[in-house]
Amino acid sequence: MSASERYDMAEDSLKSFTRSKVRTKILLCLKDGDKSTSDLEKEMGIRNTTILHAIKEMTDSDLVARTDKGYGLTNLGKMQAYMLTDMIDFVLILERYGDFWLTHNISAIPESLLVRIGMLSKSEILEGDPADILKTQEFFISELKGSTMIRGLSPIIIPGYAEAVATAVMNGAEVDLILTKPIMDIVIKEHSELLKQLLEASNFRLYRIDMDVTAAFTVTDSLFSLGLFRIDGGYDVGKDLNCVGEDAIAWGNELFNYYLFKSTRIESI
Image 1 (cartoon, helix red, strand yellow):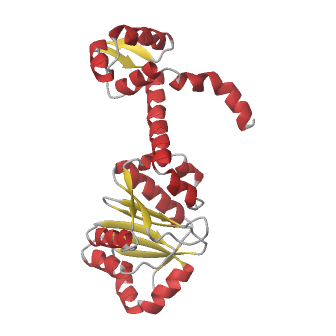
Image 2: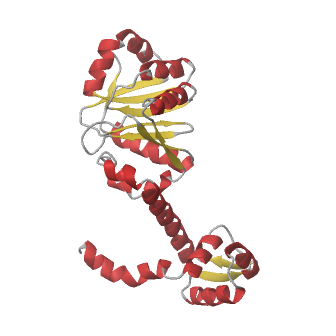
Image 3: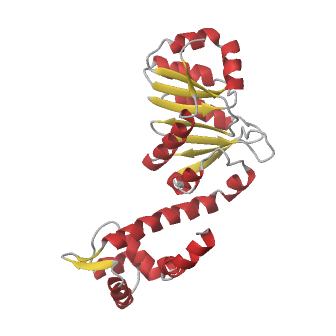
């Protein structure tokens, strides 16, 4: 069955999710727990009679049911509320960073994660300026040094990166690092002694990936940082998407595991 045919089957239900602002807000408010109509009136800023009319329709659709505290979501209602929350975050991050997504190569991000890009909603674009183009990298390096967990993939050379990773390892951080083959060759040539020391540490693991990757990213215990190549093929050294929160860390870890599966562990040079 084609995507178009599947849409035809689901069209009415899809339109019902957001056709009514009141219904949508009720779903989102009750996602946090059961509430009375007066609670909903205060939270939504909508008249009680309007809320009651919408709740009647939602009760008939098996989305809402009466509870001791007033009204709550049924299992169907909870599932719709979760989907709506994800959809809202997805739309917001597309609108907020539309230029970033349009001008960069997103092929490094698997489809399964692109559809959940809303998990990066707690984020900001850190951008260098003409007087300090490396501001993003300086922030990134300082964050690495104080991290207790680092998982990253790098298809580029970042000034100070090797030293920052070494500092984190010596401070006891658990570090897993994936390098593309060209970058691995450069690191071995320029930092061979440091790399040998790191490989002897039980809390450092190095991997090589033999494919072109158009993203550089790092997950730490408190931050997920994503840099992308531009559409024209060059890496955008002056612009990173920095994300915080449990959802962003989980998203970043899943992206790392996606590439870890394609990588080979390096235990000596």
